[in-house]
Image (cartoon, rainbow, N blue to C red; front, side):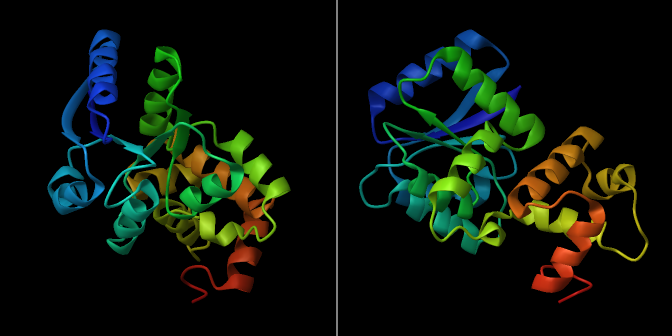
Length: 214
């Protein structure tokens, strides 16, 4: 079962998502919050048992961006799927910079919601390459380093290690599947606009991203 937590101030929407996920099977909504501030207060006890947090952007007291700013201060790489009426490219860039793993419109279909949650759970992101391509073209102050997640930075550190780990060994060290590591690699290469492991080492050295270059 995939455990989901909903954070949205609209009770009708939360109820609708709950029913939708229950009908899809393999999903369970374990907790619901109508306030970002209250959610933050309970996050520590939720993070270990939750696969995906479905987070509304527009909420009173603390909006979705502010929620992720607080999560980032905790140095946590939890899976957040952002749900909103409309998210422009600049806003997506801000959310990605704070660790968001995917975006959906509130008018999305049941199949889109299912696919987004499954993709984020299994490979870490939903519809990433399409969004990052638009961001690169549209955001004037695009900084790829801001988009690197904690897990991707760990992947970079292991890739640059003098022991020259294979991707299979990196998967074991990160306690994930080889498929997930391949996705980390693909995302990192896409974000940093590099094409090889050598390019990754050179980029990490130039920008002092991780050990052993820090």
